[in-house]
Image 1 (cartoon, rainbow, N blue to C red):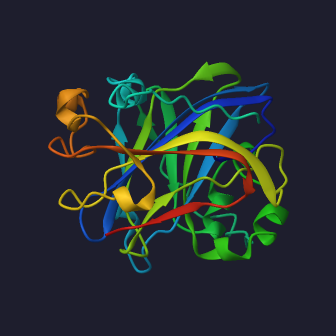
Image 2: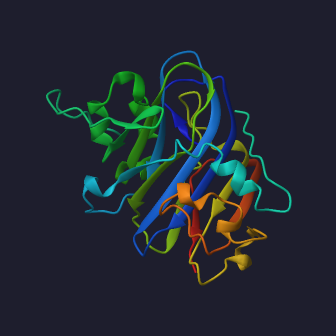
Length: 251
């Protein structure tokens, strides 16, 4: 799941794909439907590699492939549909505004550290008290996607970044939908991944696609996001679970 800067009335069909591009970098793709009564930002915390330059974060445009996750589901015997019910120190006021990128139909920014949230419009930040309740997040970076009010399904949001721990693949599943962090939340959505192409992660409890990625995905539209000669793996998270991000140990 994700964190929203303002309350949202509805979030559904959350799907996340992750793949290690190399020893340090991973790609992440995210899609959901949501409804909000005012402009809102979705904030994804990221374990950005310490010492890496902000320029090493890269947004990827998947607006030409809105059916990315629908096609991923078609690679499995029973296509999965994910449905979900539901400290920072201020930077100096003269700090330069964060760069805003146009990625398909939405605007997005990369926030290198918590202090840099003060360089975003106030509507697109979370209350500082939220971050103080999450002590592990003072070392995180953040991808921020800005949306207009209304009910909508945005096209898949994709980006590439150097992760802090090369042994683990990261999925942003922390929930913040009402401005508060709850210890446990209802999970009902799908995670997809391609780990090391030479080693299938079957022992980790992930369902394996019936075919190779190029046989059911439009890989000409995905660039480096997919490894076209590998299978895809899927895991469904369901029920009342600990409210935290998800890490998957790589082979």
